[in-house]
Length: 248
Length: 52
Image (cartoon, rainbow over all chains, first blue to last red; front, side, top):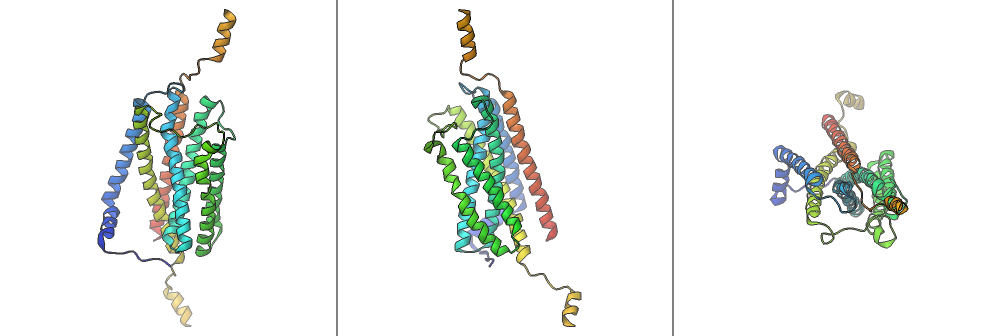
């Protein structure tokens, strides 16, 4: 079932370069540096909003976090579909990793949104279409990860998780369009033409920072999931004592 | 005149003043949450390498 990787050509060269410990450490250090710079720009350099004042600075963490949640949900969907068409432990491990990241980024991003909502809306939470659809996604993702823990057979678990992952991912576009389809307390998506250029600059740096962090988390979590899957499906070698017992 | 002032004060000017406590709380939760998740990944990664 496990597929062999190609050990030649440019793909192998890129893989070897990316897999070098020094390159990986440099990537992590670079990510932290971009993260610190982006936070500094968002908290000190970007102008306060005309109506929301400094409270609006929560946007530089809230928006990228929720965007990463949607990205992770999309990766889970793609991997789930791919697994059903062509079973591979790699796509199964990536689906598991991305689902966990969607839950983590979504839970923190939603909490930031609730804190932002208190001074601007007057309440931490309202059963508005955007918030409700996000809450549904978070509960569904928690169920998806619980399902993966309850099923012992790796192949059956992967198939059930793939089907569940596809069903859950239907909510991702609904979340995105909820503010356009229904009357929502949550604002519609902004774009660079409607936002101060200094705010756009800060937001882009923060999106880059959170995206780099997302990549680091995804790679590490994928490796953990893949290693666990390989351990599960690998037949253990028979111990010497076991061999004697089998022979007798 | 006093009544008008009272009413206008109650309505406000439609702008939020201050609010840094919300910003600090949001960023503290964000950074703490991500740091804890990074720690959990590091621990699980070490454990996974140890099992190999």
